[in-house]
Amino acid sequence: GDSVTQMEGPVTLSEEAFLTINCTYTATGYPSLFWYVQYPGEGLQLLLKATKADDKGSNKGFEATYRKETTSFHLEKGSVQVSDSAVYFCALSSGGYQKVTFGTGTKLQVIP
Amino acid sequence: EAQVTQNPRYLITVTGKKLTVTCSQNMNHEYMSWYRQDPGLGLRQIYYSMNVEVTDKGDVPEGYKVSRKEKRNFPLILESPSPNQTSLYFCASSLTGTSGGISQYFGPGTRLTVT
Image (cartoon, rainbow over all chains, first blue to last red; front, side, top):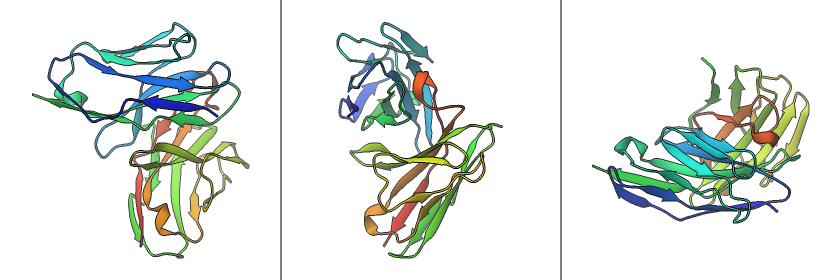
């Protein structure tokens, strides 16, 4: 079945540091890939997505590129802020199926 | 304002006492889904619905029931809750099914404790 593997957290960074959160996947067919963010006490919000190989999703300074050859969708940001502190989830949706598979989430803490 | 609402937000109950968590969306979305979030396990899909009267099991459906009688509502029913159903529950919706990169809108969550 489909699966998503994320790096374990928590990740603690100083403000303005570079962020990478690794995500790899196993899926049948050609999945769509997502990053969702969950701020404390809230539901998940879509951060960015990519629907085919080599697509780059971007939003709020975050980027992720759909790499089919390495089955990866790593999240990056050049300069994190305290307000980026949250839990980040990588997810996939396989074409033709209506089930969404999430990773276990990576907690990011940014300190001033 | 486009939103997914869940009620209640917090619930403490006892083993075996039937309960319902309501979910409603005001975006005329066809697809709705329930997830549970547990530490170290991420989000796992319980049930989903492609449209009115069309529901299907996700990855962890045991102990749960759902119904979709109206497009906007998708209640989650625990007929005999057990302590292993203590969790944080999220309802989500999207315009259509999730293939093709359609993203979901999530509710604020319901924290359920079963003693």
